[in-house]
Image (cartoon, rainbow, N blue to C red):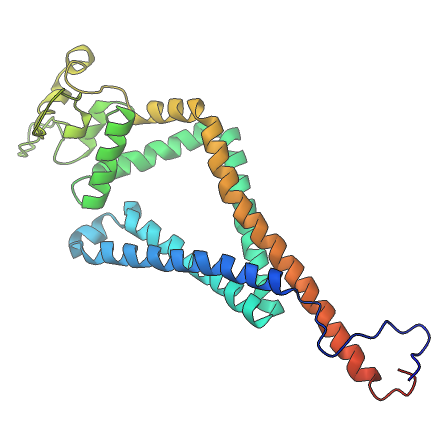
Length: 283
């Protein structure tokens, strides 16, 4: 049959605008992060279940396991939309995935810019978080290990100084404190001893009662905030590379989802056109 003048070129019945490469690349891209999100949630839930109930409630706001669970759940929901949307060619799910991923990317970008512009306020917030973590140091084993790791890695002690450990009820220097760790600091504040076979966990005993000069012979006296700021300044290129490494998968996911949505819409238009003109004698 002759084709009506002005009508689009005819396509075969098996023709599809949807590229299998784009479709399954987006699917496996999301599947990878979907599996990672499930592992994160599983590890976070396991860590929470292994803790005592009273300790878990006491330090809920500074619990690394909670952060792991929350991030894992959000990633799970986001990648679920991407997986099912690409596999089923569902425009609604793909647009939801693209929109959420764009919002996450913009929030990360805004956080980086605001953190640079309002560095003093960020420093104050970080100090508040560290002080809160010091208060709950003995309440949560995961948090305790995290603080000890940070103090050893950055060669620091406390937030502003080693005397910040008085914020903790066990290390407080008040006269009515019956704790055996009164006026002490954690062992992670102590200067490393060469060829030490057994860690002396009491090396920080009574260090808060000493002045900076005397304490500096045994422990790190500089606070972790200053050390962290100095580390960030000296590793800007590394942090920039990490930020770029996080941004690229997000941008790839946004791009692939937008391409797939456009292809699905073109395929729907083609199907509608074929249905409308199938009975047309000039088609």
